[in-house]
Length: 384
Image (cartoon, rainbow, N blue to C red; front, side, top):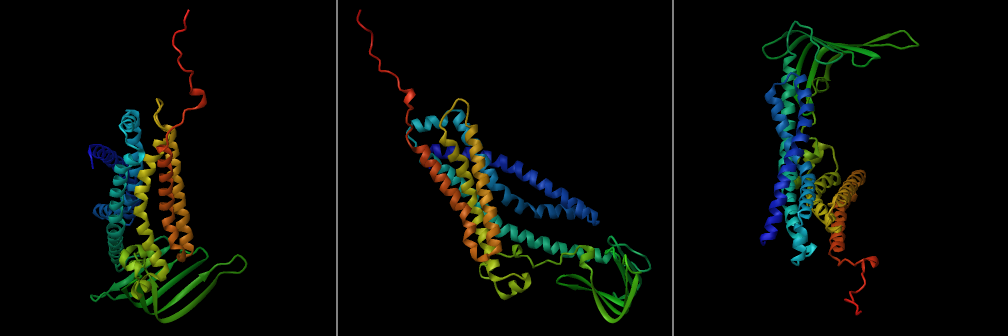
């Protein structure tokens, strides 16, 4: 890599660092605000909120980096053109293909960063978030174990526990569920116990009854009573428990998704083609980074030098990036409907690369002077 390549690469990296920092900050603050409202509303501490916001960083960065790469190359190429450095390079004999080499190296570098995030850091962060959500659900459930007090853990839920034994057994439990506007269901049991399950905390009630009062516009309210020896009530819906732990394909590594075993399929409820589709989507995501970088560079070369800048080319570059993103969304939706169409997830990268090749080929063609630009030959001074 000669001095010109290092100069262009250094310029792109500087602008990339700036745009990545700004975009990550904007996306992260937006997510942090929503997490803050949710977790603080559940009575969590500021340290828990900070932990969750930090764990969302890998996902945010993986989404932002391709956009930052595009912005860096577009802005950097605009600066090189505005300061006539591109003209000087072309006058020195450098073709657009040759000048695109450091930009391609820069895009591959960003793609490697995205690959590390989507294949390693993002699954680890999501698994950690699932673990913490389960722990928080257990802590929130424990807060409801206050004997002799009517409690309201959620909208429309009333809970009363007469006593709690040293072994954790609940005596004299009453639970009323009025979340359904058309019916009120009351559960009462002589004994109960909160147990941990894969789908969240469960309330196991023994020797009790269920009273359901249903109202109707045409008929008077009807009360039905059912007695039971034992019954289970899902507390995960009340406390917002992380019952989805281990049941999301995005929590698993790419290697396991490419060769899904029976344990993974049973835990997620997904099929093997759907698991492999998730793996291919991760593999295809880093490929968009060099495409985005090359789009920001190749589109701005088409117009050549202009005293008015290359803002028109910048607009076309943004249109090309939007087209690739729309194609990405379309391919993801089609493959999601039919996992057998997983090769479609590589189509946006291939289409973006083809656009870059065409743009570089057009910019490398020698420009032809317009017919009106031809001037009459200079015949010199005429004799008297």
